[in-house]
Length: 296
Image (cartoon, rainbow, N blue to C red; front, side, top):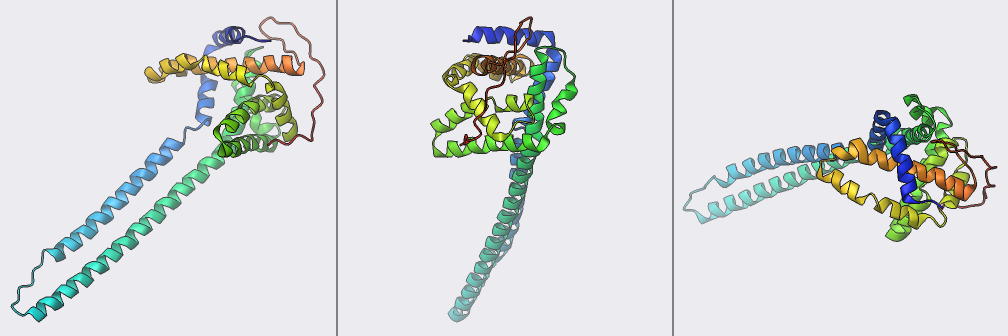
């Protein structure tokens, strides 16, 4: 059994002994967790507004020049003809404006789609392996002063396996969330240990990684949820202070606490013991994984 205080005390110890490196690695984790969307949104929004305002201004000027023209004539037949011409002229420009706006909308949609696809590809093929490497660095930080280069292990050790497992983790979480919010949250906690498992076992199969995480989180989802809630005041303080306390203390503290949770669950649920912070332990054989387990 574990307690929140136990995990947090160990996290603080690991933070203090290698503070600046932990902050740097946590900054990398924050970037890989979605730092590109705001740029894409502001770019597409600005591009859309600029094109739209330009086209509206041009069409408005054309129509205004026609509307300002008056045809003074005592002949009612001529006046009627000119009225019809004017109506047809305005109708033509209305259609033109519609085509322009439709074209601008299509261009904007294509740009947004391209940005989304690029961001998606970066997340799958760059950010996820980098995040796994960061988690491996956190785990090594418990026992030693690891080199920063460890964060690149996600690219050098069974890269495509890491990409596959992390992609499936995200995909399955999204699919469950589409059914209902609660199952999505439950599955997110069930898959929570997958990045740490992959970080320590780059050759593990997808089925084994999912099964191991499921086993580790069995009966522990609520406790992990309460652990997350225990940081709510820290997150509020970080938000009120423009994120500065979060960057330099709160987020590194949370990350290291989650690492301690992983190590503790590995011990209590799988019987695999680690040695760190003066602890002594033994490593039991890894439990047999049921390859017939379906991730969903």
